[in-house]
Image 1 (cartoon, rainbow, N blue to C red):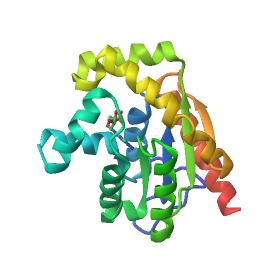
Image 2: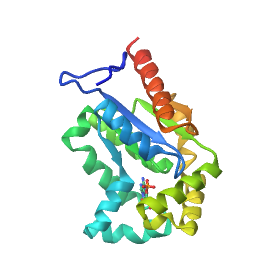
Image 3: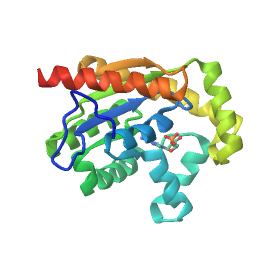
Length: 210
Ligand code: AMP
């Protein structure tokens, strides 16, 4: 594994990083989070993936959240926080996490902080991936063709964009105020964006250990 100077390494060789990835639908967060999971050895936690799994397994939670997802609306906060809390309590999240798709509004950001405060593991970095809206539409159309996600139809995507602008975009300011937010340009090739993010993480880790 490539060594990234400055990132703290645990005894078992894993890196301790607690990262929140922000960005519009189609900004590439999920792709980057999956790559970072491999590079950093900390789990990629996507509430969207967890919800889709619950829906496909027809669990009681899945039945409750399906209609919200199909419309491109946010799942109610109590259900989302319950799901996140359960995932955060699993042993692998003790060494860190890359959160993708959470928090999606200010109440979720505050709930995350109080959960992590209780666990003694605060967020270390929030990274916002910026892309231009044209590119987002093209990426989502491509994903719809490849993955067949039921919420990637044009009408639902438009609603997800609106929900993002109204409820999720303000979350960036929450992390700016905490001095944790860095923006990276997500318009380049996948690997270039990964390198930008790793650069931010390295710098952050170096500053924290200085
Ligand atoms: P994603 O895969 O992150 O785009 O999420 C897909 C869908 O799952 C969203 O459109 C929401 O319906 C739901 N979802 C995922 N994460 C959250 C969250 N943090 N809060 C509320 N709903 C969420």
